[in-house]
Structures are given as structure tokens and as C-alpha cells.
Image (tube, rainbow, N blue to C red):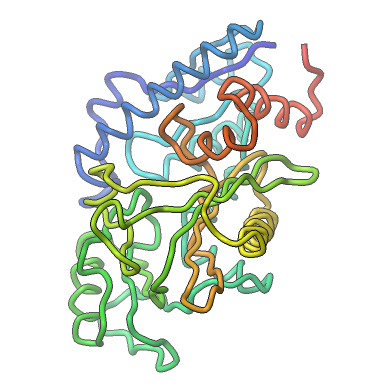
Length: 338
């Protein structure tokens, strides 16, 4: 099978800038993201080639659409997170849809939905899935919903990697809320999400497969390793420093693990994800899980990203995980493996 892999054109990666100031994180974050993408693409390309597939590199540049029209491939193995912020994650898929190229993972509209945290939460609520109460702000002066309870956490609604979240993003009163809203809207534009902050433990769960999807073992995010307690959360600085540890399988009661996994699969299905996704949770002091958000294109860097770590606990070597993701997409698209 001829499998395309999307690569960052070196010149594009060097010169591409976020669409507006503040978008896509700092230059350091961009550099780290690009390095992770390059390492992931290289590892996946090697595994596919060793399995007998012909790997075709497809640079994502200003000739991307034309390349797709002319390249001879059966499917693209998609791990492209972009060089100019998360929006390129769904834009690239939309171009592939337009040209008629099949790819692994979720469709463009699913990535767009997952990118919009506030819209994702509306879908989760519609399906009866627990997510913290929230309000969306386009202007800092918008009246606060009186049903919301402090503390609240303020974050850009359409950023990843904790971009726009700092140590003072958790606010305990309306005065602090207005200050952080004003700063965040000025830096990132709207919408900005203010949701009830759940004090407690944090977990993330990978979901793999389609018919039916299966939850991987629960991963706990250990903020204590970075000197944080139950109020610990992923600020952009903390995530960039890579000082937060994880544990898998999480040291929790079996019933709680099963409930978190059940909710992860429910969220996966609610957004109509395909092949794989990762769902983030907080569990409050009463042991109740709350869905924070979905990552519809989870990181796949070997030995680093949470998804392959959890898959390894479930018995998937990195090589088996890569080939399984390809097989899932081949089956879903009705392609004949060869």
C-alpha cells in the first residue's frame, strides 16, 4: 500500500507565523511542536516502510493541494498538527477532503469541533455527558452568568497546549475574572471560555478503534511532581517545561477507572471521532469525573505522548499501534489492504 505522510516544508516551518498575535503559542512552543512532529513522522514512516508499505512524503506548503491532486497514494497517515497554530489541524484535513484523499483519524469537521472547546462542551451537554459549567465571552464586559460558581478558570476557547493559560488563570472573584478576561481577549481574541474550576485529580484517556471504540488504560496527570497540589493545572509555562509526571494505569478504584473510560468512549462517539482521540478529565472531591476537553489528534511521539504510553500498558508496542491505526482507517474507508 502507498501511504502518504505529511511533512513540514523546512522553509514553511521556518517562516510561517501565527495568523494573528498570540495565536499558536510562543516561538519556543512552535519549535518544540515542530520537533515533535518531525520525530513522530520519521518514526511512523520507518514503521510503515518496515511493514512493507511504500511511504510517500507530502510537504504541506503552498503547493499542497496540487501535490495531493497528482500524487499516487492510497491513504495518508495523518499526524499533522501544523506550524501556525491548531487551526491548520482541520484545514489540512479539509483540503484532503476537497481533493478526495483518504486519511487516518477524524474528519476535518471533527477536528474543527474539537478545537472549539466551548462548542465541544455544548455537544457533551446535549449527550448528557458531565462537563464543568461554563460561559463564553467575546467581550470582557459581558455580564457574568449568576449560576456560575467561583473559582473559575479562564482560557482561550480555540488554543491547544495550554496556550493562554497562566498561573493566574484560576480566579476566585469577579474582579480577578474581568482582569484575566481583558488580558486573554486582547491577546487571543474571542471567544474566551470561563468554566468552573474542578479542584481534584486530573486524568486523560485515549480511545482507540471504531466498531466499537475502546478506552485505553487511564493515565493520571501528577501535578504533585511539579510542586502543585489539587489546585494544580496545566499552565502554558508548566506544560512547556515538561515537569509534570504521569502514571499509567492510574492508581484509582476500578469502578472509577471504568466510569472514566465509559465517559471517554461516550465523548468520542458524541463528537463522531474516528480511529483515535484523547479525552481529558478532572475528578472532584466527591469522586465525580468531569470532561474538560477532547484532543481529536492526540500526540503520537514514541516514549513521550500520553496516547502511546497508555497503548503500551494495553499491550500495544509502538509499532503495533501505528499499524493498528492504519488498519482501522483502511477498514473504515473500505480499502483493500495490500
